[in-house]
Length: 492
Image (tube, rainbow, N blue to C red; front, side):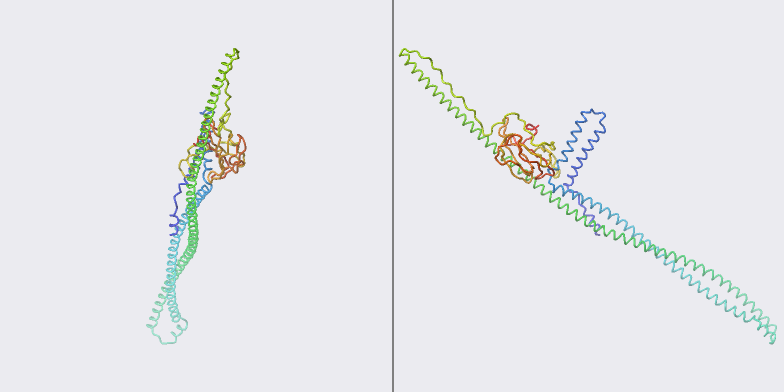
């Protein structure tokens, strides 16, 4: 049957749907945990309760914000698949109920048909009994009528007059009297039988009427039951078509979810490749900066050594000249004041191309917003495996200004499908480490590649470009070319 074919096509929930359900369950479980803590707060001190509530609220927020890093298309596809699965389940349940009702109606239909057949047969029997009783009654009635006519003819007044005027013997009169008595007795019996036949006929007619009423009721019940069966069959047909459509919709949603899952896997692979390439570029710039700093240091050391050599040679020459002058003056008998050693010129301060940042080592937060998702390993909300969340998210309104965390130079600015609009600032050497900050998902940036920027300068505006379901800043930090937690040292 179509129903069996369609219903048995129910597919198991895809694991991406399970991941979506896991997130929702995680949010719900966290919310329940908050409620449980609040309900049992009496034995717990107020400060401990506040700490636990804050932790649970943070977990709820992290679970919800985790969705920011799954593509909107995949999230929508999973939602559509879940909805199609729910609709298919409801349609299958309705069809199952309709099929049960149809089978019950068919059973009642067969029962009503049997009842109708029995009633029709009983009516035929009753009508046959009426016909037989009527025939018997008619026969007895006809016979009784004939005998009554004979008796009437033989015992009328004319017959008595004939007896007076004709020559009839006493034996003949006696014979006629006996015949009359016999006829009267026979007529009485015929009348009794006729009455019995009438009673039997009336009883047969009553029974036939009752059988006819039963047959009429059975016909009506059978007709109503047949109409009900046809209606339920039509309803089941409609629901079979509905289930077939829901199966097609579910299959289409499952295909789309699978397609989006493959796209998400490809996107994640691209993000990992992009991250590795960014690390490589930053490491290359750090290496170049280190090489330039080392070259500058060597050049400065060489210059310092050359200056020291020149100063030493000049000092020796001066000392030689002073000694010669002293000798001349001594020989001339003239005393002169002693000549002091010449002081070398003060060394000029040397600068490196990536000069260290003065002041506090803590950078300024680039946006005014709450920390919505921390750096670290976490479960991907769709793919179901743990991966690195390579930055710190700050929730902020779309269009909120972004500022530079510290002085530096814009080293990269471009668009990436995953991170959206990206900007990176090299800050040079800070506390002995080469630091780079990265800003992602902005709606746009207002500084150009290679531009020097100052701490607190507006560099762009918060957005939701790339793989993001809401406006926020995804802040990243690299130390010496290696990605680190932005909040571990540089931000507070």
